[in-house]
Image 1: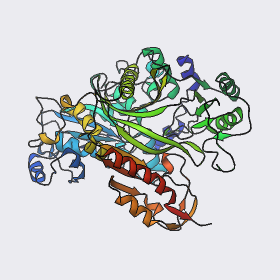
Image 2: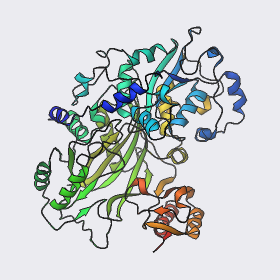
Image 3: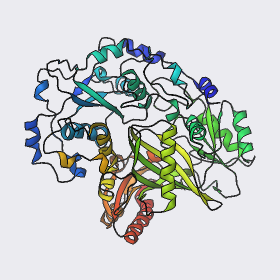
Length: 583
């Protein structure tokens, strides 16, 4: 059962974080508040603003403070003079200029809201231990280890932590006492995968559930629990799966799926020599996916076609570090799932108190390359409007039900599913739910192809629509009206993010600038970027096996579908010749 799984998989080794917190004890964790600019600043900046919301993120004004907080310390926020309410949003791990930093800037300037910056345990530890930084420590997450999440932390879909039995004490009480009385926290936005659990716990400790928060639920991050909850609560179809504590359990489940003993062969990151081992994927060959229950970006995901490959994959995942864990937690179990063939979609959804709207629907172009089975080549925008294909509508409706099963009622989610056709019906099955944004710079494309984007919807959901709030003057044209956003988006042009795949490894001896110039000159290319380390000869380059090892990207947009497809296919061919390495 799900409950037994959680008990068996529990790893509460927080000794390392406790030791670090003792070192940090002289620096208290306090609210790091960035206030909205004053009215005069808004008017001064107004002349520099572009005429569309999509251009707003180009602005880089210097933070200023509202006059009513003139005597307020930025870190502690101690001020009891003003009685007017100021909306605020908590931003956890908001480092990306096109995700969290955009939200911070827009919240302050468009909505007249304050922004409270918090670093998750993982990032507080990383910046301290790896980067040697200390400036962030006052903005770290308060210690929540003394709070009792036990009754709800073992959730299997029957309930969530709602904060009613969580007593604020210790560091969290000190943190809350540092908030001005007129600050109204309207939600939490977490940019990082590693901070998602901290964000849920923090929201519960602050008492934000259910008005602005979804409570705490392990099933939103654990891929085994996630599927079990979606199946049991809403009756949605999911892949066959099993959480395996040892190799014998893994092999038994693989045999149950029809995987047989064969020559040693693994289709995954291990098999980088595709010329020595021919990859054979056929409809007759039964396969199983082996992966960690908590992971990201197809990291350590293996597609196994025989029992020998299952053994290799299991050994690689078992006891590997848990992604984003602030402690030295290891995967005590390995997740095995039936291989689901079909077309993979990603659905970006924003929720406002249970009202769900699709911000963007993407179709993945994943292919086998360099011996890896799931290499990202492209992420293409598709329409989900009323008159579009039935499969896209089915995908979005499935995702809405999955989010309902997981009690996701607030904020942004990036959900991945597989769709195929069985006996004349469309079958949709869950890959995973991620309660954070699509981890790429998607806004330029969605703003151009749809007319709005997920981040602006997040701002509208948490901060907009209050007729009694004093929003900044003359900023209404930049604020997205939640009620005007359709439930399903339609696209007005073809758009895609194309990922540059490297087929070589070694020292770069030559950069094919002629290839890069041809790509940049294609009609559909609106922007492109090669990562700086690959623009210097002598630097190392590796073959692309996952999203983390690509060499750059291109944004494509064209209202002519034939031209769009022609340019897309041309780039896929050209990127094979971008780099030459030493022999």
